[in-house]
Length: 228
Image 1 (cartoon, rainbow, N blue to C red):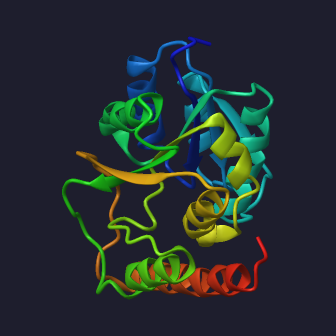
Image 2 (cartoon, rainbow, N blue to C red):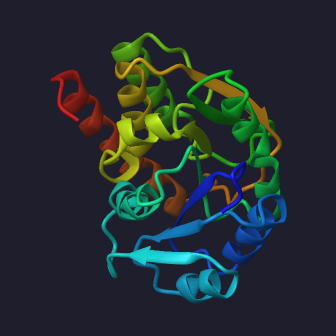
Image 3 (cartoon, rainbow, N blue to C red):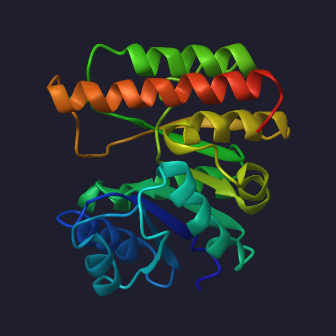
């Protein structure tokens, strides 16, 4: 692996149509990077397309939630003892190449954990889930984040070890932020021009955000008690 390249952990669920482009974009920026796809029990060809694009796939073989699948992938990444780690979602496509801004911010010492703020908002609902996530992180840490549940993150190796295992399911990003803060790590946000598969104001979209909100409440309550 290139000494300057991050280890890359990509979370994916049924992203067969975009995962290849996402991995290709990462490879275009860091040709020698180790790329691990944490596949959360996809029922399409996500795993096959990932391997075809040159990534290693880690999966429990069933849906165990984003945080659980990412933890399995993280354990594989930790075997490398990486100096830098990049996390991203599998639906970024070609825009994933722009994540170098996050990696550069951490490598340059601006922060230990860099979170991407999307330069353009696409889709979304009424903001209840994101609003709760923002409040939960501020309640637990005092941090006032624009993108509290962004899955696009870079961090140094020490911080990565601090935040693994991840919080369950969609609580992953809230847990990661709070764990990093409590470990004394500096959390920053960086605006990046990214594209992703957005959920709109449809029945499926509202169901997705309701599941997110339920997971956010659970992880906030656990962290409030001091648990991980």
